[in-house]
Image (cartoon, rainbow, N blue to C red; front, side, top):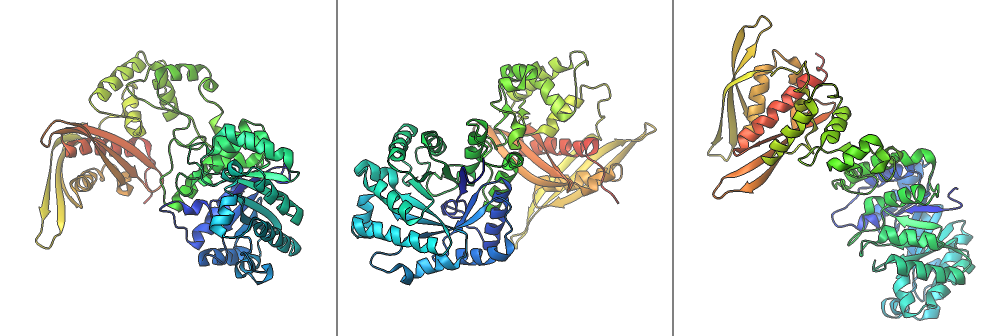
Length: 533
C-alpha cells in the first residue's frame, strides 16, 4: 500500500498549532515537518499562507530548505469569498503563490453555517467550492476539500453535505474530508454517517476528528472501517480545545491492528523518537501515558503482570514495543513480586538469579522502604545500587560521613547565598583513614552540599569533576501539622553524556536531598565512565 492507496495526512503545523500555549517559529515549523517526514506520512499541512505571515514565510523557505522523502507539502486555505471572482480573491492568490503541490480547501457543509456564518445562499456556497477547486486544478495543484462541520450539518440536513462533496469531485477534487469540527461524535455515529455518504458518492472520502469526546482516534478508525482512505491527525493529538486525533496512535493502530501498511515499514520504529522530539519543539512535556509512544505505554507495575511477562512478554503487551520504537519497562513498587525484581535487575544489568535469596531480600526491602515513602519508579539509579548491594562484590561506600552543615545567608541587597560544609572520612588503599573537610557555596542548600561533597571526593574519584545536578524535584508525602511532613526528593544528575535519577526520603528536606545526592555520586563512580582529562 502506498500514499496512492491510503493517505495519512498530518496537520500539526496548522490545526495542531491552534493548541493553547503552542507557538512555533518558522524554524520550528521546518524542523517539525522534517520529523513528520521521518515517520512516513504522505501529506504535511504547513499552514495558511496569505492569512498568517509566519505561514507565508514557511512556504517560501520550504521551497529551498525542505527536502521531503515521503511526504508532499500541503497549503491550507478557504474557498473564494461569496460574490468575489476566484481570480480576484487575494487569499486564493496567496494560496497559489505558496507553490505547494497540494492545496487543502475548507468549505462549509452545514446549511446553518452557510446561512448564518457566511451569510450567503446554499447555491452560492456550492459555486464557491466549484470555482475554487477548478481554479487550483487548472493550475496543476492536487486539491483536497475539508467539509467543515460535516457531521453536525448531516444531522440537520443529510443531503447538503453530500451535494458539497459531489460539487468538489466534479470540479476535480481528489478527496472530500468529513470533518467533526466540534468533536462531538461517537464511533457508532461516525461509522453510520460515513457508510451512508459512501453509498451516495463515488470520490475518495477522508476523515478529520477533534477529540472533544475523547474519541478522535476511535472515530477515525470507525470511519476507516466504513470506507474512508484518507485520515487526518496531529502529532501527539495537539489542537485547540481537547485536541485532534493523534497521528502516532492512528499510524500505530492502522498498521498493527488493522493490517494497513500506511507508512513505510522502516518508519514505524521512529514513532516514539519523533513524538518526543516534536513535544520538545512545542515546549510541551511528553505525555508519559500516551498510547504506543509514551514512556509508560509498556510499563508494568503489578507483580502478577511481571510473573506472566517473565514467561512470555506478549501476555501483557498488546504488541512488541520495539515495533513503534518503544521499550518495555518493569516498575518496582510495593506491588512488586520476585518476577518484577528479577526482570528489573536484568533490565539494569544486575542479575540476582543464583545469589541465594537475594531477590527475596530485595522484595522485602522495597516493601519496607515504600511504606516509609520511598519510590523507585522514577529512580532507576538508586534501585540499581540497592540491587548491587546484594552482590558478593557489592560496591563499598565512597566515604563515611562525620557530619555536614548548611546555612542560608540573605544579604541586604536581596542576594541569597547558601553554604555547606561536609566532614567525611575516606579509606585509603592501605586501610588507613583520611579525614577531609570541604566547604562549598550554591544557590540553595542542596546545590551547596553537592559542590562541597564533590570537592571532598574529587581527588579520589576524578570522574566526579564532570558531574552536575540537572533537575531537582520535591514532593510532600504526608502532612503532620505545622511544618512537619515526610519529603521525597528526586535528583537527576548528568555527566554531559547521560542522566540518571536517584531518590531520598526523610522528614527533613535537606536530609532527604542528602540521601539522593549520595546515591547520585555513588552511581557516577560505580556505573559511569570517568571523564577524560
